[in-house]
Image (cartoon, rainbow, N blue to C red):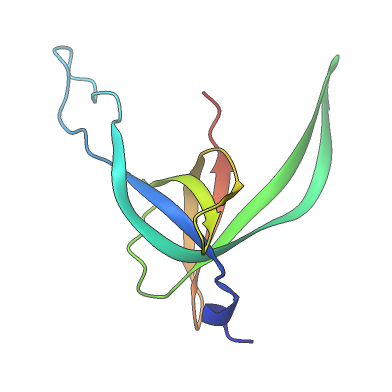
Length: 115
């Protein structure tokens, strides 16, 4: 199956529209607005336990594949992952941490955004 044939999901991609600096010269807070809905396929790689003192967490590596010409950048965020009918199948926000072009698609490393 081709990479494009596996892209049965849709990512609601948002882009930061804030620009400039505040009165102290610091960048203004990001303001994400809808950019584009892009075909994709999202999966989770192996999970691992992390123990820090009394705290324990499970970390899952999330990845996504997009078409080669998809307009996604490492500054974008994904608001939701839906199926072709618009039903949310993976809730929550993800930031795009890294993008790597492959021979027939673009692969992105995702990180869950906690507010």
